[in-house]
Length: 303
Image 1 (cartoon, one colour):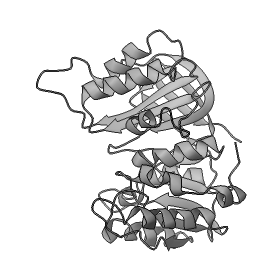
Image 2 (cartoon, helix red, strand yellow):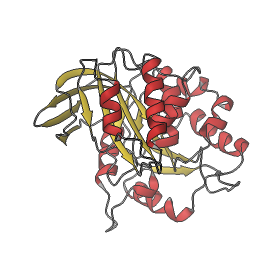
Image 3 (tube, helix red, strand yellow):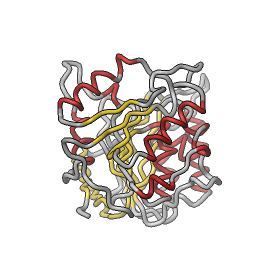
Image 4 (cartoon, one colour):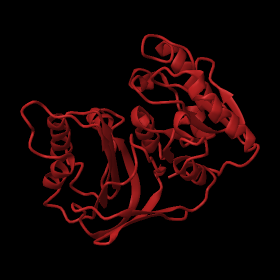
């Protein structure tokens, strides 16, 4: 994996909108805060554009992302939001200049497509908070933002997670991969699919029916994604839905059944994804995972 340089005051951060549309009021407070920390912030020309549900037409969103990728003076790219639309532009993007000057990319949800693409190019990325959620209800920087900034600044980080009744104890280390379950599942069979062998897989999702979640989990299992994992971390599965005729299993029960024949550690309920807390994770970096009866410890290993 490529080692990215930490950002520091004076570094340039670009904000782009690869997917859903977003209003200025959800981005500009974050811009102001970043500038107060000493960073130069540049907005893509079409960050606030609107084309139906998208932040501009495909050509506009792709142009903004391409400009950010190509910029040799840019040190980090933060996506304004997820939603849907990154898949519509991924084939338009050229990463050749980006690889000459690789930089951090931050986002989650639909941004999983970019995480997967960059992981296959051996570039670490950050699954973390986007501008709308930088601050808590009192207007102060939230823990999600603090954790994300630690990672882009090259600082060490570790997390402690409360025990869950479904946890499977064990110790593992490996590169972290994954993201949104629906997106990871949709990339199967494409050149953006991820290799999970020997790695710690993180998954989260929102607003899915339980039966559909079960289908996606079984597809991952049948495709071998669970076979050779070092470990599995399940984040938040928020606002999950059921049919009038109940499916009969919770999300945790679905996963527990799918991985019951494997021996690696499994952490359930990591605070990451579409819920109130979305702690930052560095994909493409090596982490140490320890799941015990008392709870889970997750620590980023030094380069």
